[in-house]
Length: 85
Image 1 (tube, rainbow, N blue to C red):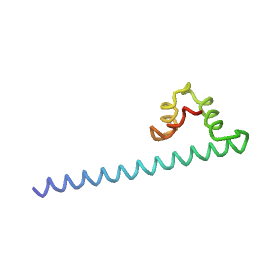
Image 2 (cartoon, rainbow, N blue to C red):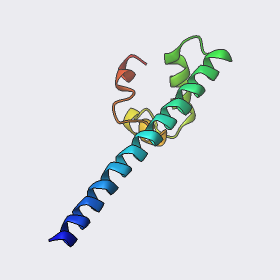
Image 3 (cartoon, one colour):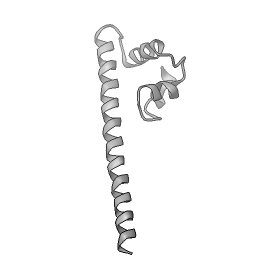
């Protein structure tokens, strides 16, 4: 009985650690993406939507916003407002 509880506790802790790691990676990827957007705005994109459109044009996502999000390691719905781009 104690052994199975230990296995369960270890599995649960591994899941918690994995979720923390995934959130940290997601946050890092969002920060990197936003820094790129800010940089593009500084060098000529007049607004956020233009900067993101430039990034899309430079990618091989061919207008597929879900794939573009995947390529940039962004959450699935991060660019949900992409319809306005």
